[in-house]
Length: 46
Image (cartoon, rainbow, N blue to C red):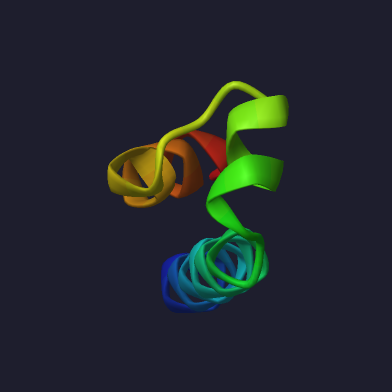
């Protein structure tokens, strides 16, 4: 069970990083993020 949960969390993290990484700096600024904060925001998503 723990392995499955860890895998799902990792997938959610990667998906979040990928989606936010596709945004332009302007779009990120509009939602209150800087490019350097993407990984931190993705960690909070899990």
